[in-house]
Image (tube, rainbow, N blue to C red):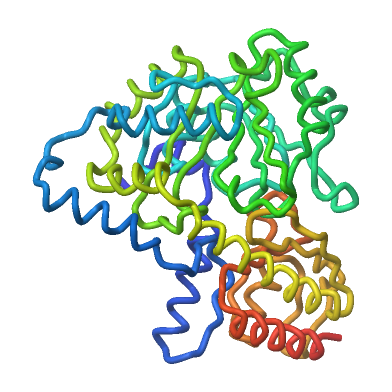
Length: 398
């Protein structure tokens, strides 16, 4: 009787969560593990955001079910933010607030895809894109950007991958796991491809938009002709250090927002009322704490980049956003410490966890088996200690 659905059997457990769980197991055994596997800010939620949540509780007005799509004032504030900062003319009717950006993406996939549809995923990609496509019973098509192009897919590659079955394209910028940021010129070229194909839609995951070191965050939905073709995903977890509050949102043409609202109404209903009041404070008040966090991430990037350059055989790009490095460690595949042999990224990460007590994530989970993901959302001391341990463990491989 232990029969599971083909949907659940078609997907893998989230690799980032699985590695974080293994790191916790080691810590529970008293082992000092430096955890660089989770994409979670190590900062606390800014105090003024927490105070807004406390005030909402004390007011006693937010204990009823909120509207499925989110409170009107929050959706209006999010629309105003996109009009002001991203030059995309969203209105409240275009926005659905969800229980994290992951649910926003799932709502869209389930609302738009049918069996036989294809979804082009720019690879390397965030681990859940592939799984959510499969849950919607569509087919993921990976288009790979190489390290020589900063892991970014080109417009020509996109054009070559499109078939009559292609329904959606999905990518993130700044990118998880590579930290790469698409320039306006690159997005214009991608938009031109999309506009040449009727009914083709694109999902732009912008959840790391505030952690961008380039000074240029272009939303593809702002480009000519792209408002009606773009679904924008965003949230509060990364830029506002609000991972546990679980507030994400999507912005899209009204017919798609309505469909996502209908889907969410059957799955979870609305996001937490109190979390939404915190989100409203975050989006309408001083962004200074976010900017301070970004400056700290920038410093950490420099530290880790210099330390990675000193690891023999390791190749790393120079990320311009998010808080990750995605180094190529395939030089060590086939090497051994005498007790175990490294054959792939998963072996590499397990070796580092067991030998160096550093938690990383295999690149297989992100579509690139030669790489591993390292999060630098950790203290400077932890980062220096982790890279020291990694260097020492690598020295034992021959």
